[in-house]
Image (cartoon, rainbow, N blue to C red; front, side, top):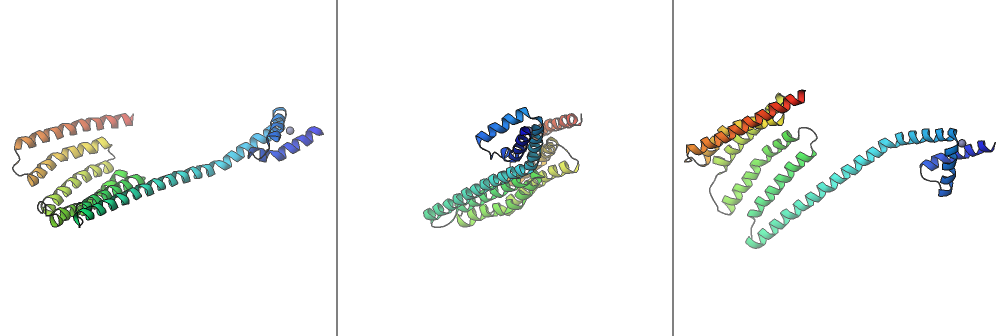
Length: 248
Ligand SMILES: [Zn+2]
């Protein structure tokens, strides 16, 4: 009879005990009873399991929430640092020169890296493709800011944007995009696509040199081309090795 009453009391207390709501004296009684009573022990174990199963998704959601909050804080902090840096550049520049010149380039560069970094960090799939897309879209505005600041505001250099910068940018972006495209079309590993980019760099370098420095000697180009070709062959070999290993 006594044992029966004890068991009922213990079973009533168990939910509180599991939630750590019971006093240390009660805990001692419950623990002693659980040691000697298999029936209550069984009830306790079943309760513990259901509770842990019920709590698991909540806990996971909470962890996800914490992770997201952490990321949010990092983004906000970085954003604040970026805005402050740009602000300082603009103020110092204006104080010294009574106009905005180099700070426009600094600001443009900071915004460019932030946007690209944000896209890279936040995209869950196809990080590289999305980042490259971002670079492709932002690079011409950035180059325009640099050209405008240097030539129109500071009176430095010449108009290189249309004759040199944009053709070279398009050339190298196309080379990078071809590497990426091959990667996604043929499911190649990263080494293959870098090897393709290295191969395409050979004509890429030639065209770049012709645009920037038409008087450059042919030997330099040949040495450059050889280096790229060797790099491409090594990368290709690594790519083949990695793919064979992955298939095993
Ligand atoms: Zn019992």
